Image 1 (cartoon, helix red, strand yellow):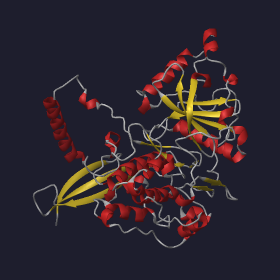
Image 2 (cartoon, one colour):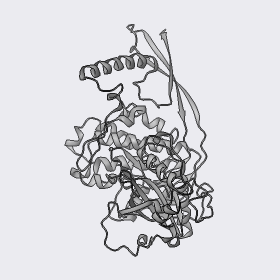
Image 3 (cartoon, one colour):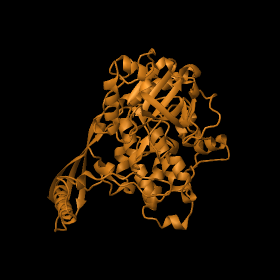
Length: 478
């Protein structure tokens, strides 16, 4: 082990002074602090849900938050293989900062800086290392750092980051997470004609963001910082939400909702028959969440958050509506000449207005998208879509018709300007070794037949929550 200590110097010998904001003057970065930076101003009254318990910080690799633990859906990820190899060679079986080499600065934010890094002696796995200088932060921002670390350690979702390691070195907190080479959605949007995306591309990114928000809300986490700058694009073209320092946690009570629907003349050849459908859906929405902190990005703040009277889970669904509007039109719906004007527009009683564009009006799905935006940007949170049953209700909107929610990870990302996608070979094409195109066509035909058979029984083609189960009864009308 002495040879390993010579090869990897102790953490205390590493010079991290270059991570200071003052020490970097001219550096080209992928993500910089934009004019739409997030606010973190606390109101006079804080909810008990607002703060997560702060723990003592030690020089050991995160005693409170596990330094190394696998995630179920990422168990075959090559990054985990590289991490496991490094920890196996470590003298104490843990990952340390000396095992990493920093390559370049990727971006900066309110709390710290993000670097592209790799494991030493292994160049086939890229990571993002978020380095936070605790000595440069106030007590309030230190609590935000602890909040983000705790939330990252609890996430296990394909559209959310994986925390590979949480390191505490001297007065630095280092979070090792996924690296997204395609940057963020804000920069990608600026590369498009008119700074806007086609409706089909909006549908793709909106569906993935919706799934990520649904998962966070099921854990009782209210995000509060949704914007294109915090939506990163992985190398395969799918999204990953980032920056969880402004989140707050609340209690959530999962439940099963039972509803009955009647569809006429669709499944039988008799016009006087109906099909009764009993649907059971899993709903987990933090409707009891409450906070009075004014945090977020001013163009994405909801009316109830601006008023200071208190807000809950509805702020995320308002921000989701603003996001859809910006992806469609290249600007936010209530943007003014200044921050004050923008906030007044949001707080006013005026509703959202849409731009008149004859070219856009002809796009399929435009009417449904505008209707969804209007229902999300309702200024009364009690009437806003999603505030009662969360993503379950939003998924039922006609804009998302046709999406197979359990298969969304297999959808091909849109091919748009400025996006480089790394194509991976589908596992379905390599089952049982090499096969001819004719055999593959036969295989897909058989699969399609089975899907139609099972779809008629379990209604797989419907736009339901993927925790739903249906029970059908056919009855004759009186």
